[in-house]
Length: 401
Ligand SMILES: Cc1cc2nc3c(=O)[nH]c(=O)nc-3n(C[C@H](O)[C@H](O)[C@H](O)COP(=O)(O)O)c2cc1C
Image (cartoon, rainbow, N blue to C red; front, side):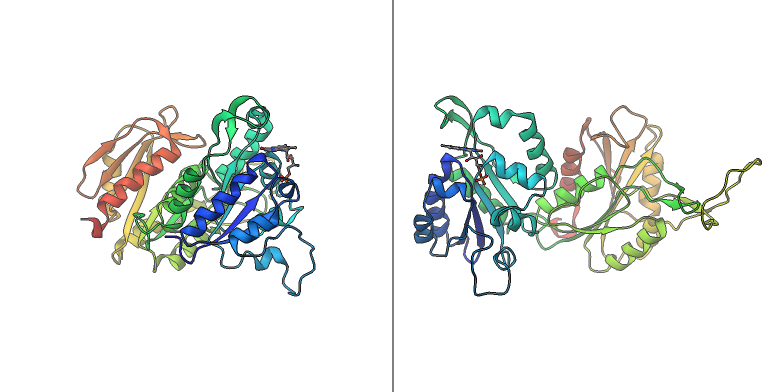
């Protein structure tokens, strides 16, 4: 099942480290190639010799250990890796990773790798519930790190609580789900998503923009990746972090967004335009900074290209999805946009509704498909909204009909 899958198994200094021996043995039975990287603390709980014997590969601990190769271990080990699994994952290691600390082989390897990471935290309940730890874990979750929740039970500190490492079967299931994605609905589909606002410069420091945060587009990219798609995200300036496993292209102006979309468009199957591209830009961009002056300043604005309309007119068999953010419940303009721009699906939202629209983590949408059927959804998180949008996309993809 896991034939030809290379897994780096990080083992850190928790009492559950003894369970890693069973984990390796199960993963080996499924055909995986296991490379163990231990922290120094982990060697107090289980011996490298045990893990080496079970994994049939050398066990790595020391970043600076003598090596005959000129390529550093954290780089060479990463090559062709399908998954980095850390089980058990201590509070210390998780927190270090969340801060970008690279002070041992395991944390250096994680920082220098783009591979999907799965972590199985285990610790004392107070440690687990500590807001510092929770914040660190949440930060990593937002970046696409997967966590296998610990279980409730008797802990090493002799107390009952939530903090036991998830059982081995559950960890194996998660590994299978990440690595065997043959059944995922977007496997072999190339998806292009645009997100965020564009910035149209007035002078060297000022610009025109809008309130789009990019959250919806990033949620869509994360969901597309989870469903097995090969995802490219073209993003306007945002405060959001890049997503693991998603190709990122950062742009600022509408013209640069158009340039990037045009370049990326040809080999994609599904294109989702969730970016709030500015409709207008200043005709003249002043050199330097416009100085304060007595009289009023007028800016002449010119229209930006309508990227979606241009692409819709020469569709080339792509599945096109647009967004219509309106200031009323009148869905008619969204239907007209769907028709005029030759879209397959449009997502409508009324930005004046509480919790629906810019800068928030929720949205309330209606999805209109090509046959003009309308599906209405309650107020949901943007991640849940993204799930519903993809359910509709998948239902309406040509091969699914
Ligand atoms: C007996 C014992 C059990 C421990 N179990 C855990 C644990 O389950 N989870 C955890 O986060 N830390 C645990 N610790 C503390 C870690 O070993 C300690 O924070 C260490 O610095 C972790 O280093 P590492 O993250 O580099 O492996 C334990 C310590 C001892 C002495």
